[in-house]
Amino acid sequence: MGHLEAALRGARHDGTGATPPAPPRVIVAGAGGALGSAVLERLLADGAFADVGALVERPLAKSVHRLRAVGPGALQAAPRAETAVVVFDRERGRHGREDVFVRPLPQGLPALAAALHAA
View 1: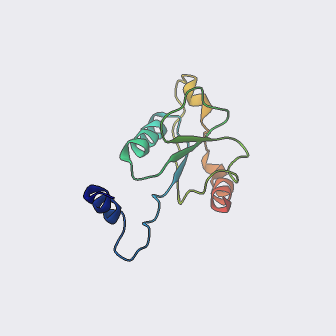
View 2: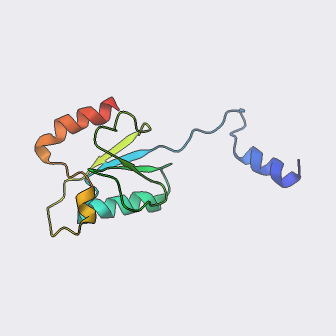
């Protein structure tokens, strides 16, 4: 092993021999409107999360690096997310792309929170 490889390997450890924890995951409900898409874009660009999940009504037409679509009924099977973001956005002129994402309503928050917490 070369000096550079040894230095890189040592930089990945905290000196105790323990491997650093994996970056956390996040899941977003309500990623389709103006605010929701801005939140989703920020989470994807930030890099603080291993991946970003988004609740969707049906499969996404295109894939985006680090974006994981979580379909109806698939929340329990999705990789565990340590953080959930729920965006209540005003309905606006829809472009089709927005129709893919789950649009949570305030009255559905208790059930959505229970499902997210159980997952």
